[in-house]
Image (cartoon, rainbow, N blue to C red; front, top):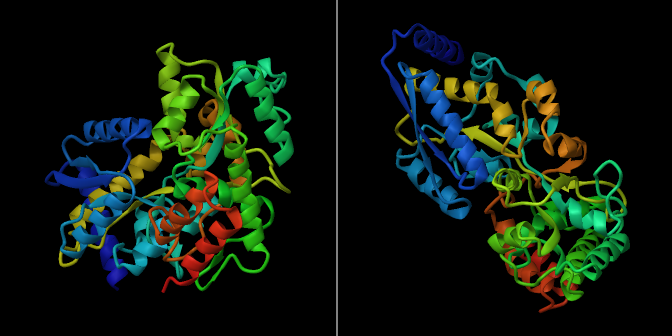
Length: 424
């Protein structure tokens, strides 16, 4: 009965917006999108407000990514002072549910916005559910990829006639390619974050998966031979640093700068840096570049990914009115309808109607790396995993020294596993 009544009220309110009879609603929005994708999200919000100038206004605020964002959400929602809607990483949802931070997105909500399971790619759809309940609406998939300088790879004989890298699969082949690039005069073969094991965890998790490994789950992390498989994964990057192919203790901004200024021929980073490349190239400040799925270093392709989603915080003592809730649902629906523009930020839309469209398939390099969605792996479903989680903290504390040759890799990975095992 409660669901039917809620649906009726939400639908009525939504209809009211469409005929202009409803008082204008404000929707307080928080996100953590501060890079090139943030510029595009602000454009989406601006366009939404223009389309709804008589009915709904999004009042957006961008907060600092990671722990600061999620800490503010948790403390604000606990006293009823959170936003009406927020972006949220799907990897973080199990933790958010355990903290009672998220409101369930009901089947009636999904029916109201005209979307459901069949509308989305499988991985991001499954990632917004905990114990059979939905806690967010998936918006994208954002894996890590390999960026490459076409001019430098061509000069080193590492670019095929199709403009794609060649000869990079396999740990030894990739190392040989890095040396060839450096022998040709490039300072570094590869830039990747080496000053923060929590960021590099995305690469390690990909390479663990490429060996058929698993991170495990609560109380049983890196079970059996998965400890050794994670050692193998971390050793790959530690060897890049040891051999001088990748600079040690390099933070995120320096990683991007090394690639964009030509000091590194390739870069492992998230698809969210695509707009950085696009914007620099439009200004005539960047070489010919591309982005592809990570090479197969071990047995089969596999790449870490996460998803940006839309979630509603559980503002304690301040439940949304039917009118507010309808406005929030209209925001989600409109954003999903305009996800093609979000794809220009590098992200792969979760909405299959967008990725199946001719317009999306014409986007480059997005269409080139989009097939990797068949080989993605998401974080373990655990309240200890996800962005800015205890797992990420443990990776940063234990694995960063191993990347930079300060302790041996086996000791670091064992410490990483034991830290996770001790979590309660």
